[in-house]
Amino acid sequence: MKIIAMIPARYAASRFPAKLMQDLSGKPVIVRTYQAAVNTGLFDAVYVVTDSDIIYQTILAEGGNVLMSKKEHECGSDRIAEAVTDMDVDIIVNVQGDEPFTDRESLHGVLEVFKQDFEKEIDLASLMVRITDEDEIKNPNTVKVIVDNRNFALYFSRSPIPYPRAKGDYTRYYKHKGIYAFRKRALMDFQRLPMLPLEATEKIEAIRYLEYGKKIKMVETTVTGIEIDTPEDLERAKAAWK
Image 1 (cartoon, rainbow, N blue to C red):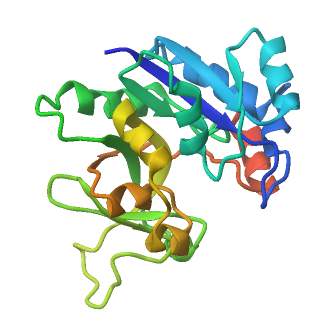
Image 2 (cartoon, rainbow, N blue to C red):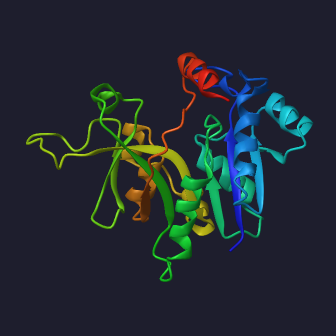
């Protein structure tokens, strides 16, 4: 299989404008994320795909692969779909631009899903990590996921799911980490399918796949990393960067 990584990168961000260009120990966040993806050694190629000339020039100056979006896009999946339309690839991994702590172990686990999927029933795979902190469980910025007994996603939500009507030791909560690996056909389908009510309500793009019957295999990881959504997250990332 030919496997590539795509890092969608918008300059604007509602909660933390220009966060991808913030300094993280001497280099912008987007450069750190790009380098982390390359350093996994898992991909035939890694690209940043952006709507920003600043980000484009920054990656170019670092000697990286970067593509400029031709259209406005609602989400990262649409941006990536445009970029890979004419590429001969099998699996595309969407690495979030604000995750400079992207690690090899987690990505390897996601890719192994496809290597073992002899029936090709899996359309995409993603990561989840168990969470126990009550504030994080209730935080609408933390997307939660519930799965079936084969770890296929049943639903994603910003609300705490499952609702703990009879909470016990069996009640577990999982955070969805925004790294996706797609079969190319699933990604191209996503681009042409309109948003439906559940996705529009929750503002979670993964829900669109479920609403159209796609199968998402979730892989549990214990690696939490630091996603840079706020200035406070950036300070945590700086403290953790060695």
